[in-house]
Length: 291
Ligand code: BTN
Image: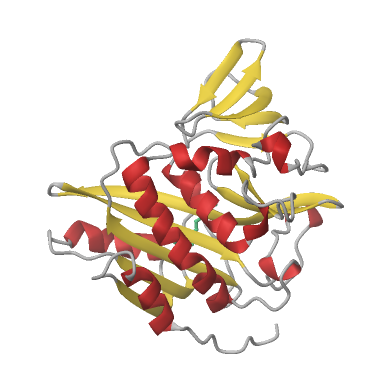
């Protein structure tokens, strides 16, 4: 395995991005933790009313966690792994993790927003509910990253701990082609792990502020522009009644709309796992079709 160069973190710039939105916010970069989400969930539980928003970035995790109790594996230095803890008070929490996906995708791939006519094809797509995928017109899309949102009530506040794992460089070692995750460097060869964080942090913070004041509504068309499940047949796991159906976009609450013989079902639960039936083809919709 070739050793990677030490990572250089622009902590001043990261701090400025965060304090532009939350003036008291703190930034910490560590070499290794169990899981940035676990550490910040424990920290939030112990935080009093004076607790401030906190970003924890780790170059490596020994017990990284994904959705549905899965393990999140990333080789040290190959992935961006961070969590952000803050008290949040939206009137409706529905769609939070989808809004985060929109913010990350737009920050990394700004040309493919509904407002841009320059590049009407997204390279980063969103797979409901929490995945970022790297899309390619010539090949199947593959998972690029994931989002894990957890919350805890502390006194009168609800703290959110938002964890992001984003593959930046290839993982060393062979993996079967079908399961090899994508990485940003396939598309942006000069990207570094710290640069990826610098790119997403301010837009992410601004999106969380927007979500807190306006909910998911402003993100709905932006999600639709990158919704890689739209129009595809799905296989569903862990759903009590549905095993297959056609994805017909998302609702204003962030639920997945699925058409089947039973009619239209709305899938709200993040406990349900969905995957496209034809992994060999991920459509890349022109924005005018998707919006
Ligand atoms: C998923 O796709 O299942 C979500 C993956 C989330 C992984 C990130 S890495 C940083 C943060 N700490 C964790 O333990 N998990 C999240």
